[in-house]
Length: 384
Ligand SMILES: [Zn+2]
Image (tube, rainbow, N blue to C red; front, side):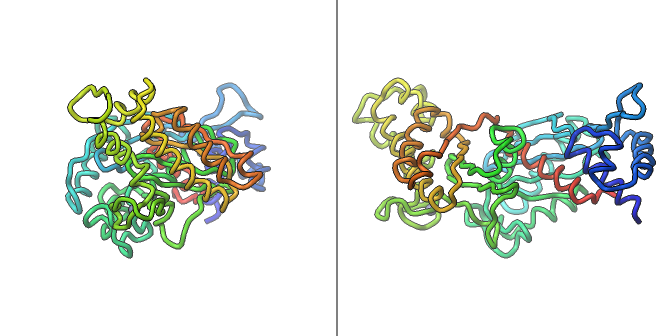
């Protein structure tokens, strides 16, 4: 009974520290050195742990990275981002696979098929997979998938995606909100490696936040929260997809920015590269000094900044990381947004607030979900 427990704790210790001697492990865990030595001997023989060749007494041990792989899947409306992450936190495989306009059970089947294909095509040994982290863009009841209906995608709220994946692929699964998974990636791989408190803001069609506080995410009584995009910004504004009027998303979501330029481009000089206007066209024109494009981006940044000022005033957390498609506007966006926050926050929060643009790539949220799975696996010590 005790031994498998020690084994799990030793593996967890090596995951957290990445490298340690037997003596260090014994001290950290408060376990006798002889016990640690005996279990490490078995882990080395099983190749679950590797040691430095030649060294004896102070041999530094580490996990055999390829023996513990976690899959990270980010579920987006039009695609899946998949990552395989090893115990040394290196990506060993990644892929972006399309998702069609299918819903309910057919969508679940397509997701499972894509994940199976990824495991097969990338030659991932199934016995090395310790689990799957699933980052979802749809707010729903992560715990059961049953209590709250999704308002964004037909039928999704009544699907227990965790149970479906576990049953079909035989992999332990953790569901995360996509912004939380991205936050975790920022904490481990990005610009917040030394920050214990920060706010991550996703700026795409939708606008969402994740709040990282003292090593954990802030959570509500349900998993449906962080919906900054659906706070009312302009009471008499446009009707939003959520059914309210004047939500932040109707002014500052990517679609809203494009819509604003499109509706007015005939009146002004505006250069487009193709038949349909894209966000990149808007950003390119803004960078060239086009006033309409600048107006649309500035109004979006100002609205986001004014709304975030409320969040900063309430939480007192002053480090903000931005990610998502709108971040391609770079300094144009960052400066205007920071100005609005500084103008509307109380002293001294206004002095301390810093806004940075995430440097993580498009697989950030998937990598964060995979890391969340690894972290949970080694923390629980449930691998036996
Ligand atoms: Zn709304």
